[in-house]
Image (cartoon, rainbow, N blue to C red; front, side, top):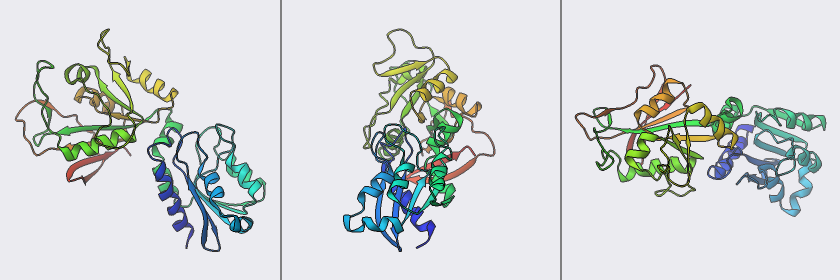
Length: 321
């Protein structure tokens, strides 16, 4: 098997941490001796052993002497600092593994090539950049947080066949337009489970009284955020409110939140779009026509757009490249 095939296995393993690794990155590791995998692991949850540690621990006693003749594949540069766990780069050196293949460099300020330097200074043969783009994409939320110092932002809304997100409503007593279906709710709640925080504007909070919880998918409820000025007594328990986007993004980053799902109304969504503060957007296409109502947000011309079908629901998937 090739370097790329073993690195792909690392990526497959890393995805097992997609719901609980944050704010840490998802990482997978594989140990290979003469084209035979003798150990593998992934980072499952923040505060638990890293992928390299799990891979080394998984090696059977009878195979442990082979470590000094093996190659370690890991999707992200081994850490070089003491955090909740000791540095993986030091453990690799102590284990005596002679070759390490790294998918991509870790941009975290306490790593940034230091892990690779520790390995090379110990005489280990290090190869960097195998399936690099795939490794970067897997941890795009972590990478965004480390480089831009804000969460990775995903926008989401549902539109009618004629381009509206809701009918005209005068009060919260009037029900919103039912554009979602049971199948589309699966996708929405999967997105919620995959993000650390979820946001709506103060108008959506007042009109819809959303719970913003994960109910139709497996996972933990995200941190719930409201953007805009909320009257005293109007903010439900468990919600955080912020008056402006800049303060909100800075505080979420400080709290270790690396991913934010924006499910607000068109005004809130448009404010993120106009400021370029978005990384992905999912637009659910309903077959229902409203005739009139609240227009959907306007996406910029020239963005990357794919039409996808998820659980039988047609989506426009934008990426801000």
